[in-house]
Image (cartoon, rainbow, N blue to C red; front, side, top):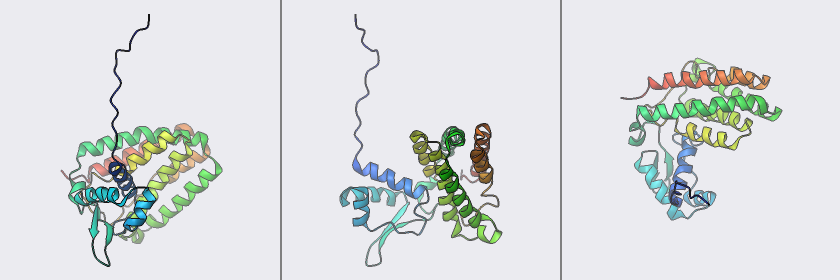
Length: 241
């Protein structure tokens, strides 16, 4: 006799194209691929890159504009401009709970990704990580560099690429996607405009890279956990109540 499963299948939820575009744009901006003040590609070009109609793209852009993430400027010198962090209401409304959930997600996934990366990394992975670390050193290695406001979004983007490169070195697509999602959200809870880097913004990255290069799985995992937890403690003090 065949028994029927007690659980029913969940109904299919079809995601609107505009929502998918919205997520893609949020992720790119959150990862620092477009810095505050940058213009996104022209509407026609951006729609082609995303493979959607301009009507669909405009729907997503209107949401980002309402959230204060971008500003849509009209006229001959107009365009879609990324706003400074904290300039819009959307970021300021994020809560401490959002931040805690994001860091908990990062901790679970990035420590495991670092461990796998130590086991599976290639010479090309190490070269890529070294190159990113060199960029980060240049952006944060001196007081002058750290206090240059232009270096803040550049460092944020390089930092995201460093963590993503570790996830890619783990050779596990689910980790790569999870890490990217969390990194795209990591600054959203802050209602603060950053004009300088923390004195030790680059703390821990070189040690993590050394452990991965050495194939020291336990150490890589431990160092990554300490790094994410430390960033959480710093971030917690910056959240507006």
